[in-house]
Image 1 (cartoon, rainbow, N blue to C red):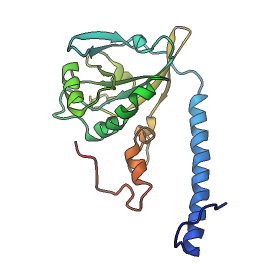
Image 2 (image 1 turned 135 degrees about the horizontal axis):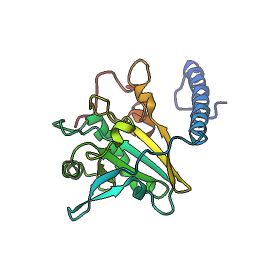
Image 3 (image 1 turned 60 degrees about the vertical axis):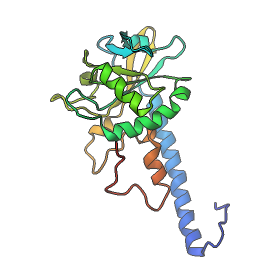
Image 4 (image 1 turned 180 degrees about the vertical axis):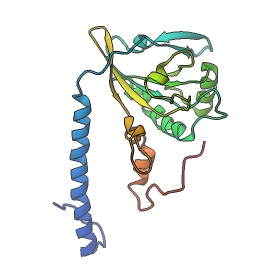
Length: 221
């Protein structure tokens, strides 16, 4: 199996690396299997309403856009991320902000194939102010302050606590249906749920080093 030989490596290191490579191959196969399961889920529930979100254009003018209008004519898939920035929060979630830093870098390429939107419960003025400070020039930022989207799709709890939930939707035959949600966020597991790690290169980069993710470091705001 092993095809590479690094300078100065010992037989013990080679054997351990061989075991790791086999595990990485198995992980790749499992990742592909899970992705295929996501793609082949049966149709989910139709959205209960055509949610109206607030948005702001480059000139600072605000308007409303419906969920159905987030779909471009030639793109039938939509990914929506619920950004933890509620009206009662002094500052946005640092973890969400870090993930969105990375997503902004690929937003243009992502938008070539699918529709993308970031929603938060705060007013659109407050959301856009932070987005400009952060340098998010390519993320479509929306306010869900005036609708039930976050409550319906688990971007907040019944008590109003904001949650970092990702959801994907598909448009078929003029109907919009739910496809998938990052419900690993709510699963009964030990440690961090890592439910949006697929979108977030930060932790995956750390995983490639001996330092790893660590136990007490978090990205600062």
